[in-house]
Figure (tube, rainbow, N blue to C red):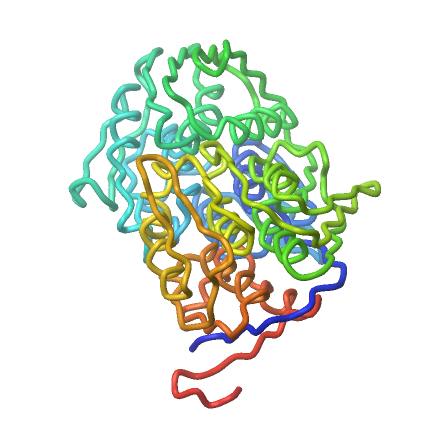
Length: 425
């Protein structure tokens, strides 16, 4: 099945889904707190479902209410296995957390996650004394036998912050103090998000310039209530839609958010879009758009919507941080170049820089390659294309934003669904 998007005028108001990154962290913290916690405004997507399944396997009882989850955590035996679905965050975050348990456990997943390397997870755990086996020879599954033994480890942060997030959540529960020396850390805003969230649950961690983390042991997660804020990653393509073809207002946004993808506002300002805040409501409106330079090293999930934006700007835009794209749902740098070429946009990759020429978008057929963020970026690109764009494998948006195409239609996006035989649905 594929979806066709045609040139449209965007106008309307939406509330983006809640943050799946914060949701997965909050579920892990609620599991680690011995007692009853409540998560308000929970995220509803496949990655959140995977994290919910993990904490249930680990012994938590999850009760769904109208707009909240009640989580009762209790000490229990570790399961023989956990399943992370296709969630890279759940894989990297929960691996150090479940390693607190002494029992042997297998970690596995499905789909694109099976193509993501796990060597850095294994090395990081082994540096702290965790026994690991890797039948997948560099990929899932991995088997771990928990029980941290070392009080010091060097962590390579060049591949991202998610594994460090798991360590920062797990290690305060050790009896001993732990020191982590972190080099070349990427996605620092996500570490700020983690530190802020665990502080809400009663955990304190000190660090020196994100390079030396001093983690006191014998800390206790306190059961509490936590509200998940709107997701800047999901908001980004909607904001680009407003900048390209009209005006959009997103409600219940946090202007002081720690989320890395709030940086989309910097790119929109650089290219000339109109941005206005009214309380927690954010409005972006189309103006004349010019090429921009942007460093996405700490916010790599912004690459797809930034490419959609750049494709309609006057001149060549440059986005830095291509090395962060290799191990996503697909190799995003390669796929963005390939799929946008089908639409007339000849992207160049030079070292760590992606160069996008503006003004050459045509209609055509492109594929998401089962990457939710690329599917959304292609849809937004189509809003200002002279001819319709059809997107194959668009259903993958369920990973983070199941209602994306419904919401796009609500603000004027010309969305029509087709079977592969082109029969209208």
